[in-house]
Length: 270
Image 1 (spheres, rainbow, N blue to C red):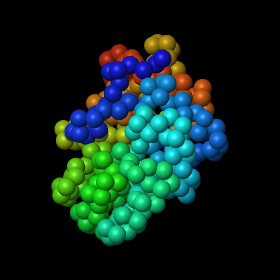
Image 2 (cartoon, one colour):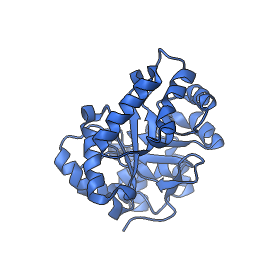
Image 3 (cartoon, one colour):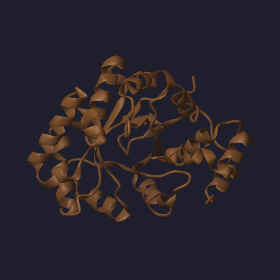
């Protein structure tokens, strides 16, 4: 068992915590194999699964629904995301949310995110329309994805009945621009960052500095790359896998920490 109780990350300032590693569902190739693999999440201490209405044209949400029926709804924290064109009105938001919940086979998700900002609508308007998912009980928490610091700040100040608890952004050991301003801001404001594409489609595993660090600590490059991220405060990494062996490797990124000097060195690799 790779799970370490210390590897729990807060969801905003809600008081709730989830595993430092979540599993994403973008780009699934074999839905049957993925279902069998994702059904193994609880045994590896992973209770955090991410999807979106866009993924597979809804097939990924259906996949997560099947996984939930196999493992039990209460064993997984579900995040899904709404396409920005739905944010034009409260009614459209509600309609889209109902469709996602139907595909997932649940009455409520744990976290609902705006997938990316709608550039044609003021952030204040889209956020207030989106709050309908919270108000109607379709989501326990709300957040955003692909929002920069300014957009996140505006979103936070636009809510009336809910709080923004998460910003899901691209972040990896090879793509660390969020460390300049977004991560410090999120830590200061109590926002959790979810890091998508944390393995850069496998590129982290062939980087010389990551390989060298992995040899030193007796881990794989994948585990080092993920551990680098979850070593940061308020950061959750959400790699994708549909392979049992890869899931085992991913889970092995929890339960330990890179030494401080390696963290510092890895923060400067190019």
